[in-house]
Amino acid sequence: MTTHARTETVRRPEPGRRGVLAASGALALTASGLLTGCGGDGKDGASGDRFRAAFTAGGSQETLDPHVAPNFVDQARAKALYDTLGTYADDMSVRERLAQSWESDASGTRWRIRLREAAFHDGKPVTAKDVLYSYRRAADPATGSPSQVLLSAIDFDASRADGERSVVLVLKAPNFEFPTAFAGPGTEIVPDGTTDFREPVGSGPFTYVSFTPGGTARFRRWADHWDGAPHIAELEIVPANEESARLNALLSGQVHYAADMAGASVERLKQDGSTRLLTAPRATAQQLLLRTGRKPFDDPRLVRAVQLGIDREELVRVALAGHGEVGNDLFGLGLHGYPDDLGPRERDVEEARRLVKQAGAQGLHITVETSSVDAAWEPAADLMAGQLREVGLRLTANTRASSTYFSEIKTKGVAAFNTTSTLPVSDFLEQRVRGGAARNRTQYASKKFDALLERSRTSRDERQRLALLTRAQKIARDGSGLLVWAFSDANDAIARSVSGLRAAPPNSHDWARFDRVRVG
Image 1 (spheres, rainbow, N blue to C red):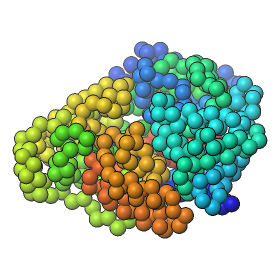
Image 2: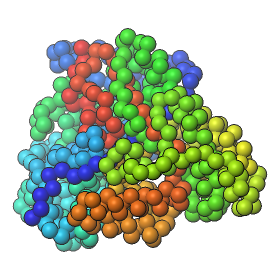
Image 3: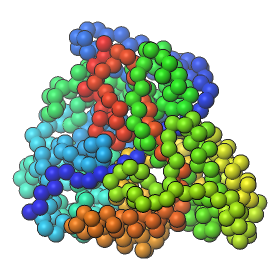
Image 4: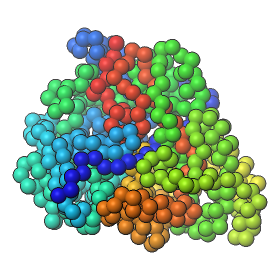
């Protein structure tokens, strides 16, 4: 058998931000009753007793079901409660977590995973049956896992538990990059038969205390975790949808950690001696999604006109306040598998105007969906409106509530802003670009692209895999409707009293991993 102790790479992250900081943000947090002071009771010595982290919340539809984890806050809660077979290094290579090792046969269709000795919070061991149940559940389209496409490659009828701590996964087709799925969001291992997540049991470093959808989640240190007990006694993940609220909560000492800072907030934090920035450069792909399955973007000339009509340099300079890099309409800049030989996408107003005229679309009105989820989006929409007016298109923004934005853009509208954090390039293409994929928001469908992607995953030779991936990406770049206009830095901020955290790309192992945090 061929051993695959680690797999390959890739990337992507999250940010943007608005210039005006409303002091009322922190007041809203206090008024909500979510933050009530950060004192310790000495139970955990110098490391502190309670750690508070502020994230954008997902609203009343939130759940502690780890297989439904579309947002950063969901993933942070999942890391506290659950574990996965593998975890991503910063470069998106995969290393072991609950899995002690994995290996494939020569065909790339049969994978044996050996589990380490680990237990759930109720004391029951993590077994092969738990892995099979968890993956079967996450592979069910009805569950809504972000890794559904990857896990649906498993033939569950042929797969089996081979002892308590050994599982054999049989794939429907060869895939030599399959272990990237072991670390993906929405692949957490839950006890066999679990359907109720109101008081969840996991195998992560913290146990459940309480949770209100759209509100605070509280967790307690689990002393028997296989990787060692957390340094803090309690963890609270609190909602603060506005960036200004997260910033002011951090500066006022109400929280120890504020997720997703950018723009003017970053500049303010750089001047503040009581905090420290954790910056992962180019970590988030800033995207404009054009739904090619609907008018007007079923006409590829208009997709091309928008690509050529926007001014990416201005968008980075203004919407991202310079904290990012121009995008080239492909995900994964700097990651393994990203084409290195692409020239930049230059703005060409004359060609864009010609394409609009050729399509008979002069003066066409287009609505783009946006939200305050990312503070870069609304200024970006304003800039794009002016830029596209020069080529004959009228763009206006429809601002949706942050709590329902991602669920609404699944079905509504013809254009929308989005961000994607670091993921393996091949997994991103499989989940977001392949025809029919559940998270393919642009409705792109290309048999040629799909065939190249399939051939890349079934090739044993890495150089051939990369060559096929490059060919597939060059096809999708022009026609998929997924415009990556920039890569923004991912900035989180912590209080000076906090140690045990480092800058890391979202989705990687060390991002939002609070079991090694110390306070004081």
